[in-house]
Image 1: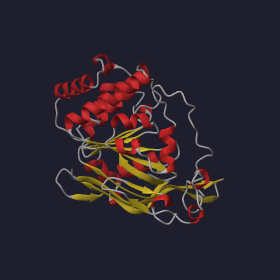
Image 2: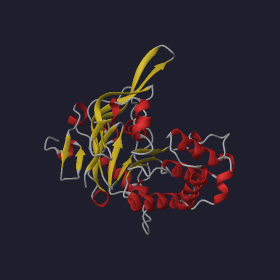
Image 3: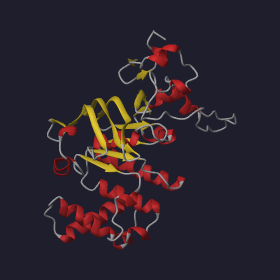
Image 4: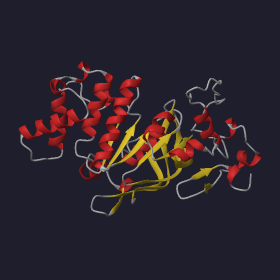
Length: 332
């Protein structure tokens, strides 16, 4: 499989003002490197506030203040085969050349993308108009109907307003909009947030079926490791702005290397296992003033002196496995 997105040493976050005077920087993404291959599902996991959504926005190219990229690069291989550096394109260039066709984005909250004053059909029509697509109204309506049917939505949805739909239906409408032009890459940011377990399964199955049919690639953001077990080929574990481990999904569940990854997996409920689940003590660090060394060391049961002083390097343990932890460098 060829590499279609290459993220290299990406560093960025939010420039914000405290009390309207003092400017501080939130280190939301710190020296992140990863790749996405064609026809692959890459998961990004970690607890709330670890930088998952910020990384997703950076890869998508939605670099809107106060979000800034300080250094690093995000390269995309286009349909034509050439690579473009996304973080060097303007928002207008992203809109015209990249968004919806090369990369599409499914946000966390469906109401953030749907206009509450427009019917669902008009929201689809606006997307076609925005892309200057020369399709007559009958073709547009057929396209919309086919897309809704493919996501198991009743055709009555076409004439509804967003507030008339359930949360799960709105989320599927947003997914339908995101997949309208069969993008090569989809970034789904917590696509099952605030829906019940049954609707969650429906949404994930629909995304999975669409992706397999179109042979597209997917970056799936979720704090839920069971979602990653169902969907992913590989998963990147993120903590306090860092990618601390990457591995193939079955390998990572079978043998988690980083102490944080172990804690995430050990928290899962297993069928027939009645032992008490262990929680991880403490809280994630303040990203305006992260701790020195390994950012996980204040919560890590294996923390050593070097962990408190130096940032661990990425240790490669195979083609698709690496971990950032002093336990695997030979210096711990």
